[in-house]
Length: 287
Image 1 (cartoon, rainbow, N blue to C red):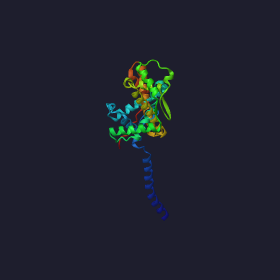
Image 2: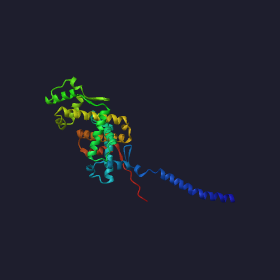
Image 3: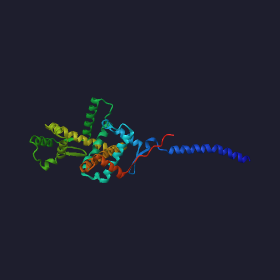
Image 4: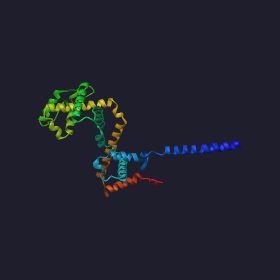
């Protein structure tokens, strides 16, 4: 009898503890609010945290009409639908995609390196001084050099109204640094890509040499950033992925615009929703 009473006492003490542990375990298994699934597009989930990140990434001008969580979610669902369509259509394999996306890593790596070296807390004048000191230092450290003969050839070519240049001239180096070089061909192509505003400034050998130096410094900065492993940083990878997604969405819409049939944009979006399937789970009402 005494043993039976002690067993009951032990159970009365143990059961609340077990229930408490079980409740804690269940609570710990519940996902945090940021990870709560708010929609599914195909077999891909959209979480509340992704909607928040999407909202924060929007420029102020793009926020009009998306003041509510429902509107933001619908915009993000559309983006995911367009990405799925891009993958289905193989848009990543289009030369247009490769051309627009090439060089992104170089530009962003350079910007990341500059942000590391030049404090955002400085005012405009201080930042300019720090930037000049940094680029001068990089130029010296990497033994940058401008070839005056090639600069003079480019100057004469521009002054003569841009006649046909020989291949031997195009392949000359207008500048070099320890890890690479800048050919006259690449310099001319880069200047032309900048438009008339850039080419108009190339009115003297000094201006041509200055632009060539700036382009080479950009290459040096990229080399420095890569050597520091900045391209392996998670935030850099996320930044590249975000830009890639933006480009895929843009090209998908452009491809739709070129092949749009009857029904227009609304029919196109409705077709995507039906093709890939969109599910928005209803939230349980608060108890």
